Length: 215
Image (cartoon, rainbow, N blue to C red; front, side, top):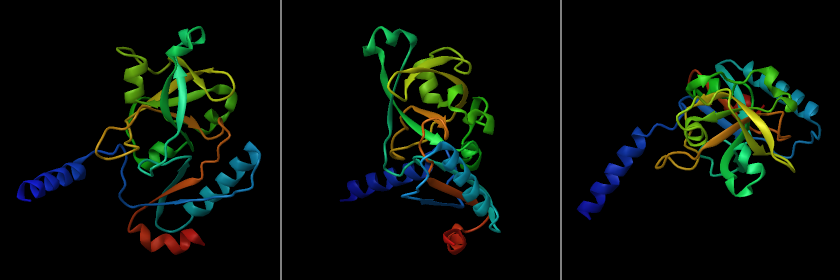
């Protein structure tokens, strides 16, 4: 029992010291379901209205959203590969993916390793711009600069070329006990998903703002 207790305490301390790849302090999160906005334009307009209303609440310092948030227990897989995968499908691999609003990394306080974050101009589907984490960059482009590189991602019926515009620090998506899986981030407008998991960063205790957030 003593040995088991010691190991448990050591594991607990290690988890407390784990770097999740974002800053969870002062943050409230919530999800929206069953939103009847069938068009990309409608989803974008609704996102902007929600963002503006939440950002106007006193004490809120940042608002963003994503299709999936880290450590929420959900997984989202996408196939990607180098150009050679067009002739050899066995070269395609799996990675996690997220659809995010342009200011996602700023609000989450996720470190930019290279390149830049998304801006509003990247939200056009035909641009095929993505941000990847450092785990993906090392795996896809070993010994190379990832920004400016292209790879194939299968977001529809056929794989399409996507350009890397930024590299961010890996977020632990499944557990604090293990490093996160390589992840590709898409601007919210590209994949047709509504980023319905919202993050509100506050300058105090976010619990105190929940009535205003619900309203």
